[in-house]
Amino acid sequence: AQSVTQLDSQVPVFEEAPVELRCNYSSSVSVYLFWYVQYPNQGLQLLLKYLSGSTLVKGINGFEAEFNKSQTSFHLRKPSVHISDTAEYFCAVIPAGGGNKLTFGTGTQLKVEL
Amino acid sequence: ETGVTQSPTHLIKTRGQQVTLRCSSQSGHNTVSWYQQALGQGPQFIFQYYREEENGRGNFPPRFSGLQFPNYSSELNVNALELDDSALYLCASSLDGQGALKTQYFGPGTRLLVL
Image 1 (cartoon, rainbow over the protein chains, first blue to last red):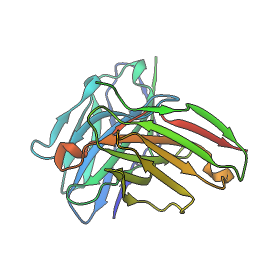
Image 2 (cartoon, rainbow over the protein chains, first blue to last red; image 1 turned 180 degrees about the horizontal axis):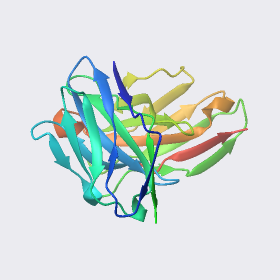
Image 3 (cartoon, rainbow over the protein chains, first blue to last red; image 1 turned 30 degrees about the horizontal axis):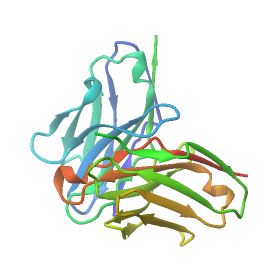
Image 4 (cartoon, rainbow over the protein chains, first blue to last red; image 1 turned 30 degrees about the vertical axis):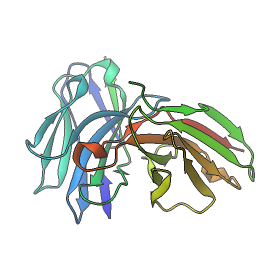
């Protein structure tokens, strides 16, 4: 079984400041990792994913994430946030081999202020 | 290429009633997964369908059931609704396989309120 921990339930940040949203996971098997964003009253939009290869992955809207296998982490970063980045961010994992269930964290609410 | 669509967008039911939610997969995708997202929580896996057969199930009771049709559209049925079933129900489509094929793309969701 897999589990995902997002320790920060809310992250307030000023516009144009950098931000890091933390994600740690636990799994007895290799996993693929994802970050999704959810804007108010909407579904989930894929930001980026790590499957294999380079541990630094770039996604949409200027976001990037780094996979750290030894620390079982997949933190999301953006060097300069915009008001429009205000949303809920979810980290998720799925087994790389058999298994088809996405396991999500509880989410981090990013609030960008002027 | 069309994305994942869901209907209806909102629904209000009373306890004990039955509900059917619908999902159309992204063009070319043959696998559909359903998730329940309670307020303030991350999505929880209900089940997945591949080629019209259930292909994995989470910790949900049998009153949650589903169907997948030959055109890969899908339904989620919930019988004997309970107050705790109030949530956003998300459908996600993907391709069966490994690697990037496991990426799931989500629809906008159906918000269900049970009174």
